[in-house]
Length: 379
Image (cartoon, rainbow, N blue to C red; front, side, top):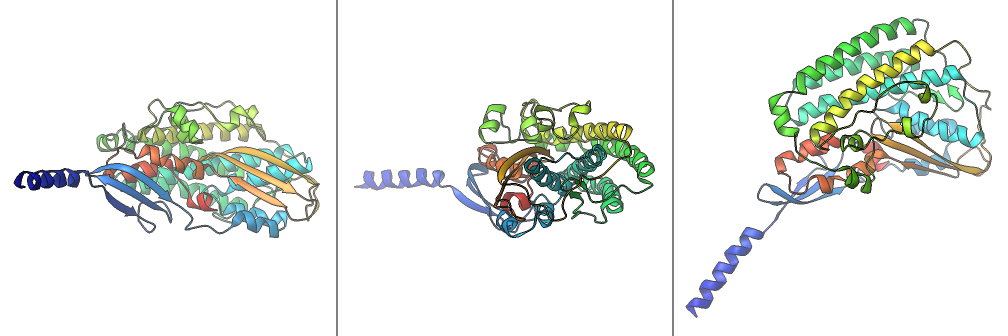
């Protein structure tokens, strides 16, 4: 009898060592980059399992598109990836233009490209700043927002708005560039070159930052593809894929630019690929500024667009990856169906893989490296 009791106590003690603790991060948490709930199961300080819960920011944007005119829908796309608004506008307008068979004037394409690449830099600067905060550094957010503000001030001069631009239109753009645009761009390019270098020197080789990000949250290229990962996150895993190169749209085939890739697919690679991408975007902008000539800024389109019956799908390379729009028209002034392929949604699915066997202290750093925007995750 004594022996049986002793055995039972020993077995109970063994089971206590195996009990996992469930921990909620969010949905209201300062490091979740939006209204997002992450549930993790811990064995000590190690994460055994992670489960993302989304939907707290769902507004039914795709369904709302069925009750809006084509011109009104552009404002809804401003609010999907709300730190890369122009890239979202471009994707929807391209889908409508494909359906309507429109030829967009060259000057309009140059304006679109310059602004979208500036938006890519502004988006990556936001990532740079808040990722520094995720890793415990305060200074990077001040430097990142300084550069982002310079771009936003130019956007305000061109579009009239700092973020929700409603500037790219079906067939072109809303209006031509300001008279002093070339002068302002020359100054901005010089400032951004200096700013990107300064940001790089400040954080990228910091011993503490390297310790927090190197070898943390790794994913290989094949697994990343299986999860549907795209954009900087996929390229950080060593896969050289960029829609601007693999399926060039607009005038991207006229520019000479590189595709930065990582080797380890860890948090540092995901961070540094974005630093390198900002330099490539500046190169595209400089080439576009040299090539752009005067001309029309919009095709001749009816004020109320009515694409013919049919469907169209387009892909673009947004700052977060492969952004797709599937558009179905029944011939009316409102779409029959609009479906968005949002890169943040697909990239976020990989977090279950990235957090497996990671320390709980690294959860915030891993989540931050994905660079999700909940506006396009939930829609």
